[in-house]
Length: 434
Image (tube, rainbow, N blue to C red):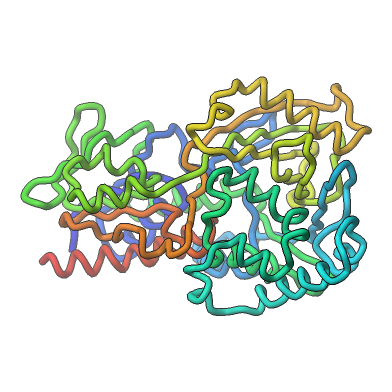
């Protein structure tokens, strides 16, 4: 058993991992570079409203989340809301997400609509993903619904979220996204999604409190610069030139940071990490006097807009004012990622006023930007086999980020689930090392 474990990163996975290890009697310290816990689920004060930097929602199948809410005594904070989808196509907002909306959608033939419906239905009913693992997603979708329908309903979403990677994504990974949302429908015409009163911060603070009570430590503003290795085993970490002794380290921050922290990684493992790709995000959050639409999310296919959609969070989680997330996904090396916040603000205002012509400049109460360089893993065909092992070939060293949820997508429930899996790996490795 490892005597003194360091966890790098205080996002949902890092906090959940600390909680699980403390339950097993381990000594745990979390080191977080930021001034707050939460990672991509951290909240901030948005001119009087506590809100998350990036939107989150809860689906009916998020069982690991439900379990930990019960353990922490906050399951009563989970609320469910009937939500709707829209699709803004060539200047018109259309209903979306149910059979009637599908039949009414303009510009697509009846046969294509039938094929689309069958694809969605069988994707939700499907249980095995292994046969989709080696398939490319766009080819898989086109085979089901045809290229004309793909060009209207899917192409813009792929192109404006994944750019050059749009045609190199795993069908298994796309399938899990369809299934997760589809499984949250309680009938053909209605879906429901969940949220926590107080947002994800409710869960994060409950975990922080429990970790404190169990004897764990959380060190903020503590960026780990190096993981020290001696005789092929972890000896500790370095922060600001100061050494802290640990016999095991579990890294939960984006894996592209691993190579700089562990220059002693075996070459073949380092190469695997270097090959993993991510998409960055510039997420604009808007506070408005009035709603844009009545939908929680709206997919967009309009040549005037370089976004795949918007998320009108107030239509899931009620607030006094209307909160809208507008994510711009793009490669971190793309020139647009370097654009100023003001450029993105101007686009967002223009886009929202285009979608709803009743919105005027003075309806915008506040607007902020959050950026994350490693926001979305690029999961290509056969992705699982491309990942380095979680227990790395240096005794006491473990690493995983949201890439390892494959074929599942990023999500707090998946962070909790994987933290439990990682705990088992650490405990087994610790026993083998004795």
